[in-house]
Image 1: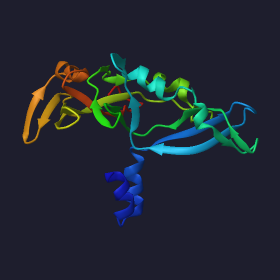
Image 2: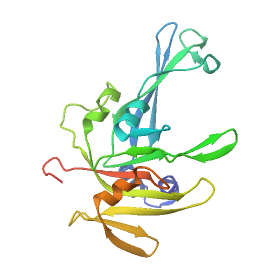
Image 3: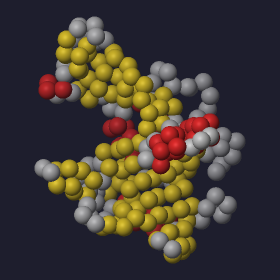
Image 4: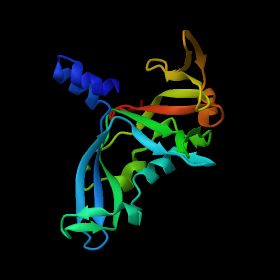
Length: 221
């Protein structure tokens, strides 16, 4: 929301665009007609990668792969095919075009069930280093592949404590200089460990947003 507002309200539009580009994930939405196989393509973008999680255990890598997996839409969700000139059964998928310098991952822990908002405390494991190979299957043919791609390093985790009705947000942040983890809870900041961060995989205090920074291609961090 802040990034969207900055684009509209900042007087320096070039600066606003530069800031937003740090977070912009570019994808191509592809809808394939199941009758004539024509592919409808639509450019799209996100400031955060919205990942559905399931009951039980999840891994960040499996959630990412599910996001880019082709899905056959229900009969009630027929898509108008320009070539057939009528609504047809179709398959839907998103292809990755480019990733930003800072990758924000949104773990969708809140869902609407029969009009009630429910929080999923399901376990979601995530690594300190996110390998670019996890995105390989979801890449678009338009994605840049002629240059080496850097992996991502986790530097912040936003945590939600509580239920869908009420809760509190805290954060784990890793310093760039000393690479140490710190825990911020309102005005209190304490040193933490990677084990403390891993404790947010599941339970009442669960990771909600993950922030990864692209590693430099010419360094190890």
